Amino acid sequence: MNVSIRKLLLFTTCLLGFSFLSFAKETQPNFVVIFIDDMGYGDIGPFGSKINETPHLDRMAKEGIKLTSFYVASAVCTPSRAALMTGSYPLRVGLPKGSGHAVLFPGDKYGLNPKEITIAEQLKKSGYATGCFGKWHLGDQKEFLPRSQGFDTYYGIPYSNDMWPGLKRWKFPKLPILDDGKVVEEVNTMEEQAALCKKFTDRATQFIRNNKDKPFFVYLPHAFVHHPRLASPQFMKNAKNVTEAQIEEVDWSVGQVLKTLRELNLDKKTLVFFTSDNGGARGCVSLPLRGGKGSTWEGGFRVPTVAWWPGTIPANARSNELITSMDLLPTFSKLAGVKVPTDRVIDGKNILSILKDEPGAKTPHQSFFYYRFEQLKAVRSGDWKLFKDKKLFHLGRDLSEKKNVYKNHPQVVKRLTALMQKFEKEIVNNSRPVGVAKNPKTLLPRPGVKGEEGYIPTLDLGRK
Ligand SMILES: [Ca+2]
Image 1 (cartoon, rainbow, N blue to C red):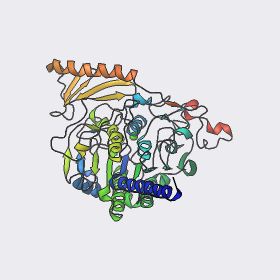
Image 2 (cartoon, helix red, strand yellow):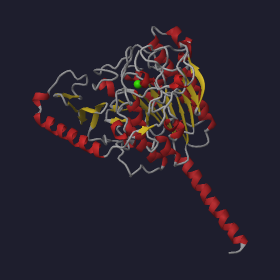
Image 3 (cartoon, helix red, strand yellow):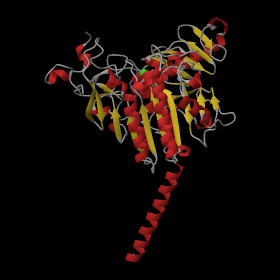
Image 4 (spheres, protein in one colour):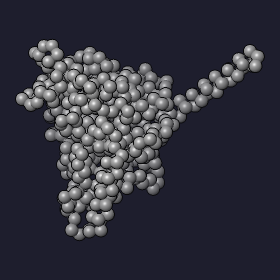
């Protein structure tokens, strides 16, 4: 081949490559997931709150779709986040709880196995820029942190904001803020706690601006409204109590994200999800559902969710179809043109037809399983929910789970019991190991403790 033909071929290949890339860029939407901590089903305007003013979420719901049967896969932080990131039940990825507690602790030897494929890793395959801004809680050792799990950049706290010396029950180290793997700040006061919502929001909107010309994924898991609570002064000033102030500040954060997208003309190119990692903690409202954070009643697992993508998701839509946080990975993958891994079981399904409110769009899930750590407690199939301890509710007629009709529907009990038995067997055979760190240490020392001793993992020290 002579030089000029070779050059021509090279040139053509480059052109083809370039046009493919620009085509991909044109069709790949951006993704933003705003994940609130411990917010209840009834805490925001679109889900009936009369206490909290949430104008930005009200508008988001008017312009998008309200998802009234959206479930997380656990009623506490760590397992819920493991499921969101991997599209799989927490037990399937070895994280139904921390190594010695309901959730991961500072210096925990457990973490999300680096061999798991996260949403961020999926999207990276297709050239997305990925950023995580907020509370991670899937392991604080280097190999477990966001930068080892598909995120280009990470700014935030590695676990819950109550895991600091302020909580006297445990010998917690100081609470760090990480910036791309390095501890850059400490959260030492309630005023510094109150600043977290704004800090994470500012980082997220800056990331959107920096990446406006390529597809991006922003994961914004707020530390709000997890205890201990304090909001920024302007929100404290106008609210009756601190919970209301925090929820209204979270609403402000949503407003900032959507405003940034509109200003950059990215609103029609961006799918935004707003939801919570589990049901409402003390002070929050999960009504009309029964129970809240930590419970296997609906109030623990069903969370207030709004999806927004002007021009693709119709305005003022609403769906009561059963969908889950595990569905985000397959749905985003499909939209980004990335294949869902086939070498492992992924529990989530593509829910695009529901998000688009297509006529007759139905849940892709025959059943949804409620776990408390490694224990299966209940199943939902259609409108029926069966607990293992002989309670049956029809969620269509009895959303608040008040009337146990176990004795009246033996056929339903039989069918749902079989679903539970089958799933328990299947998940044991198809689960994957948790990540285990060799010599875990806390990221900051316990206050007043010098040398190596200051970095001993919290669980090794026990309670006070
Ligand atoms: Ca939580």
